[in-house]
Amino acid sequence: MDSVTANSVATTTTGTFHFASRLHAAVRAKGTAALVGLDPRLDWLPPDVLTHARDLHDDPIARAAAAFEEFCVRLIDVVAPLVPAVKPQAAFFEELGADGCLALARVIRYARQAGLIVICDAKRGDIGTTAEAYAKAYLAGADPLAAPWQADALTVNPYLGKDTLEPFVKVAVERGAGIYVLVKTSNPGSASFQDRVADGQTIYRHVAQVVEDLAAQTAENGYGCVGAVVGATYPQELVELRAAMPHAPLLVPGYGSQGGAAADVAAAFASEGLGALINNSRGINFAYRTGTFAEQFGPRQWEAASEAATKQMIADLAMHAVKR
Figure 1 (tube, rainbow, N blue to C red):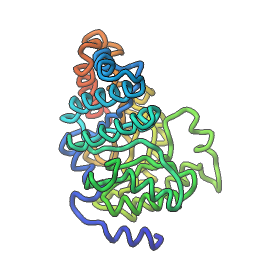
Figure 2: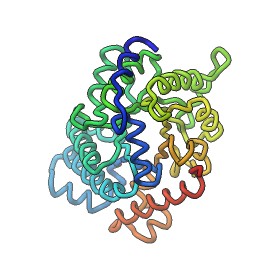
Figure 3: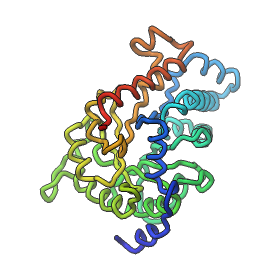
Figure 4: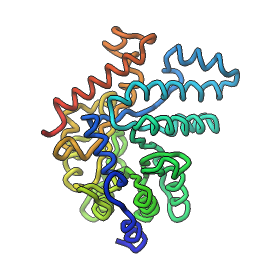
C-alpha cells in the first residue's frame, strides 16, 4: 500500500462510519440487496408528471428538470421503505445543464433524508488533483454535508490506471464513503477492451486485482470501501470475479431489462445475502409501461406499478439469488 492510502486507512473509524458496514446494515434492515436505479427519461415519464412540469415552467429545459426531480422524488417515496439504496444516473440530469444538475443534487439530498444509501452513477475517472476534486465533490459518505453532491458512493472509471483510483480511495476512507470501479460491465461491447488478454490475463482480471488489493486494505468486517461493477449479463465472469475479489462489495447492473435473471446474480452474494447490490432501473422506473404492470396499473397508477415491480424483484432475488 502506498503511503497516502496507508495514512488514509488509519483514519477509518469503526461501526457505522465505514461504507461497507453502513451498506450492509441497510441491506439487513430492508432484508434485500435490491438497488433501484433512478434513470429519468423525458419521453417515458408519466403524463401527470409532465403536465405538472408544464404548469410550472415555460422554458423546456427548466420544465424537463422539474419533471425529472418530481418523478425521482415520488419514486423515492415508493421504494424507500422497500430497498436499501438508490442509484441516480447523473448523465440524464447533466444533459439538461445547470437546471438538471440542481435537480440531481436535490434528488440525492432527498434520498439521503429518506434514509437511503445513494450511489451516484457518474463514472468519473482522472488523476492527481483532478481526481481528488471529483472525489471531494461527490463523496460525502457518512455525513451528507461533507460534499456538495452528498453521495454515499460513486462509480469510477479506472482506464487511466491505479493512480486514477487512489485519490478516490483516500477521500472515501476519510469520509466513510465508497467507490465502485468498472471491472466487467454489462454492455455487449465491453469485451472489446475488457476481455483483451495481457500477460496471460484479461484486462478485467488485471483491474479486479487492483480493486481487490484496495478493498482488502480498506476492509472492515470483511469488506472494503472499494467495490466493483460486474454485469449480470456475464454470469460466468461474475462467478470468477466474486472469487477474485472477496473483499469488494459488488454493484451488479443488467438485471431485468438488460436480460439478467436472479439466478445469474446468485454468485455475487456471500453469506446472508451480503456483498452485492443488484440494480434494476427501467424495470422499476417505468414498470407502468410494460407487460402485466401496464395492464394492471397503467400510467395513472405508475407509482403502484413501480411498487409492485420492486416487490416482485425483491421476492425474485430472495427465491433465486440470495444464498442462505
